[in-house]
Image (cartoon, rainbow, N blue to C red):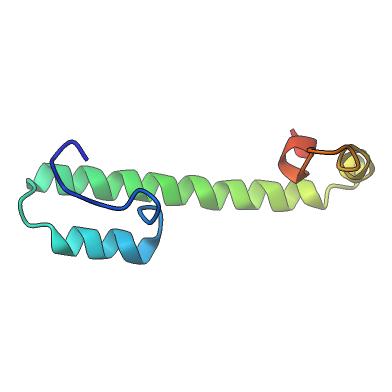
Length: 83
């Protein structure tokens, strides 16, 4: 991180690890802490919206058959087929 805090990139997206990281660091300014929390909040909001959109598209009768056909192509997964 730009503030000199060591962290695991692999674990950073986990809620528990992120909260532990914020609780562990004391040497960061309040503005950096607030920015980290806002960034985390934005990521969580995006993930929730993405899940809702994918769920809605997954059960859309107008595209269901087309998505299923596209997914028979090797390397084409659900997200690619939905786009």
